[in-house]
Image 1 (cartoon, rainbow, N blue to C red):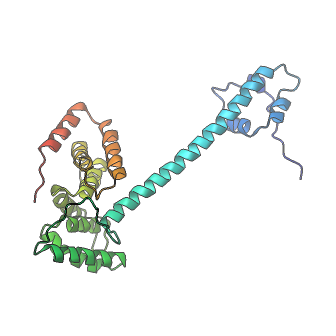
Image 2 (image 1 turned 180 degrees about the horizontal axis):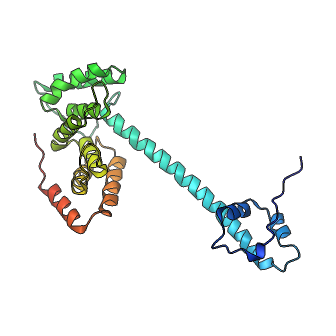
Image 3 (image 1 turned 45 degrees about the vertical axis):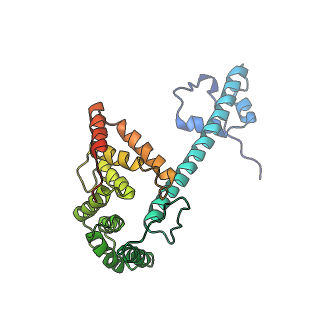
Length: 256
């Protein structure tokens, strides 16, 4: 089958590249050197054709750059989502060698066992059992269980969806210093979802979460993402709001 040639652009010499339509730019990008030369037949246009050739190459580079950036964003989004859920519902948490050994208390083993039982139930899709395992722990003040209940209520998993109850458990966990609850709560305040939008509170919770970079159970890429989100939010805030948010973060103390 003969190769299709791009139709010559008859008014090549009159093209204003600044005002060129996307359709014209797309045609230039598809044109071969022969196409460009055919478009300039009978015209003294060697210099314009060279300019068009450079424009065509620039358009191709721009297209490749956009595809590359899109791919990077997709991969980063996937990694952050995976890290968030893996931290909340890991299949097996590996102890860190640098962690300080903890002396088990009378309640530590049963609490951990119930947390793990809730995770196992969640992972097999038995969300009501997961709720039953986590609820008594959340009532006793176990931050990880409180975070788990917050997410169950927020997404309506195993329980009727209840934003008010979700926010209550998020706050209880965040007030104890749970980094994932602080990140989620910051996001809710930033987006105005389930709570009234409040950039000051959002910035405060992002700030507190980002300060936990030394916690070895939190991947550094998560902290970097929180810092980036906080800084992006700050660009939408007045200076007085940022100062207030920083003041609230400095004065905050965990509640045990």
